Length: 271
Image 1 (cartoon, rainbow, N blue to C red):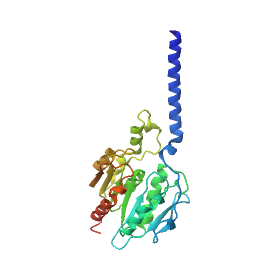
Image 2: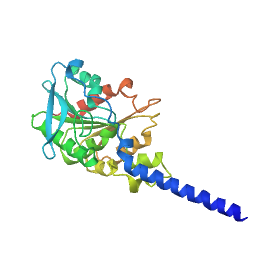
Image 3: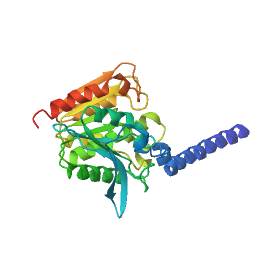
Image 4: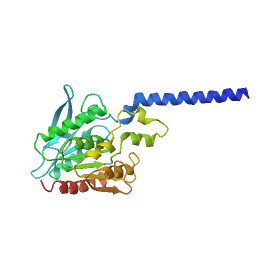
């Protein structure tokens, strides 16, 4: 009996120590788990963007973020594109090529800490970088529509709540990054551990621009109920695109650009 008791105590101690180790690892390594900072900054010469230029936008204390910019054709806005979580913004050059082919301008960039822009990757810096990019683009005198994809739905929504754009499109958005983490790790107190929580569900309430949401019904990274929930909280909802069978990265191949053009056209028709 005593042996069983000691064994039981040993198992409990082991479980407690192991759980504490997991908590410490999550606390220390959380940004490595949250962000994919691998990859490289593509050169513009590797794309068909012959009219675009690489730009450096000042941020913080003498730092800068690197991006690509091309002005729109007359009568079209520029798309301020907030990239997702993986590698460099430049890997999505196919999107920017489609923007330009349709007459839109664009500004896309790497947040500090991603391949193109050196610095510390934190929520504070991501939001600062987003505001700096908007202000830089605003100074060109072009109308601005905002597109935020996945992780980018956080800073895109924040910037739209702080600045005046003409439209906000959110592709696979989350209600908050911490709520996604809580669904993925229900056995961990992620709300206490997670530094970069991106509370879109709070910021969206202050967005006066028309909002359009696109989401895949088979998205296993950010489940579709997040997209529906974000739109339900938007003061000025325009519409939602739900694609049956599409995963987290499946919307471009399933017509999100066509939907985006129609939405931007509605939002800027009076310009």
